[in-house]
Amino acid sequence: MVIAVDVALNFDEFVARGTEIARMGGEQSPGAIRRGLIAVSLVFDLWGPRLVQLLNPMAGLIMVAAMGFTYVQMVRNRELVAMIAGGISLWRAARPVLVCSVVLAGAQLANQELLLPRVAPLLPRDARQAGMRTLGSASLSPTVDTSGRVFMARRFDADAGVIEGLYILERDADKAAARSIQADRAQWIGTGWKLENGTASGFGGPDSVGTSKVDRVETNLDPLTLKIRRFASFKSSLSFQQATAMLNNPKLLDNPSLAQMDELERIRFGRFGVIACNLLAVVICLPFFLQREPKVMLIPTLRAAPLAMTALVGGTLGAAAAVPAIPPELSVFIPAMVCLPLAIAAITSVKT
Image (cartoon, rainbow, N blue to C red; front, side, top):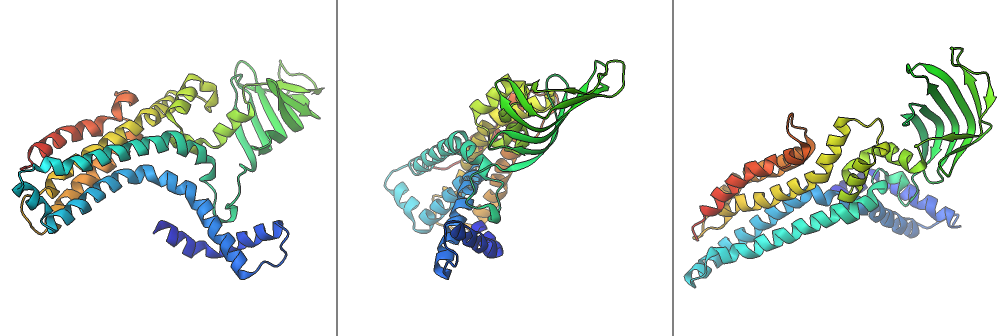
């Protein structure tokens, strides 16, 4: 449904992009069928990574909805009645659903760890950028290195690792501006940036120096660090190993702070809290659908829906929200701790 709405709203953009790609391949006047086929392939190219991203927030809803639809059909067709009449406990009917839920939870974890980090750079694209595989160029906003220098640039090419129009502000021990360094172009070599037409100018303070030539600047801001800071919105797409690497190497963070470190801890362990809430939501809703006698299932479904949504949304919010005075490694599991006694109460109430 989401893809259909997006295609309906942006179909002209997909066709225009398809025409552009066809012309880049040497076709000056591509036919309507050719442009349409390219446009369809661009839809898959754009939405493939987005569907990978949507799997994680939708996994819990998929589990609960699939469980509900399955048992509604079994109650409607008297299959559960036949099982009980044959001396089979309803736990036998619940077992395949619980096993499938655990398998889906494993798929969700594998998606978060293996697939999502690989497609993360492709997520911000729009219809006009479908088919592209480059990170592109953008201005470099003020970025501070471990020495306290502020880096700015007119253009940073994330693919080539080249900076154009570089401006560096150096500060003294009192954090006051001491001198500036400017360069037309900079390229990372070894452990620093090699400057083209680099000059340094003082600001007239006691530690200032006159204009001089600068060929190289040593810093921790290598192209990889700048990419991570530029695409900071991808932090939620990090794998457990990547988040651990960033925690062990704070220089990859922009102005590392306790809040940023706690956020990474929630990203690391939050995925496990969400998975736990998804599984507990299935268990909490089981009694509403495991019925020994045929009945209209609309009322049980309406009763189960708010409980399921509370558990699922609670798991997502618990993984993202900071809880004062509680370590982030523990706070992400608070919703699961709340759902656990409800799940135990629900599962023991089933008349099998």
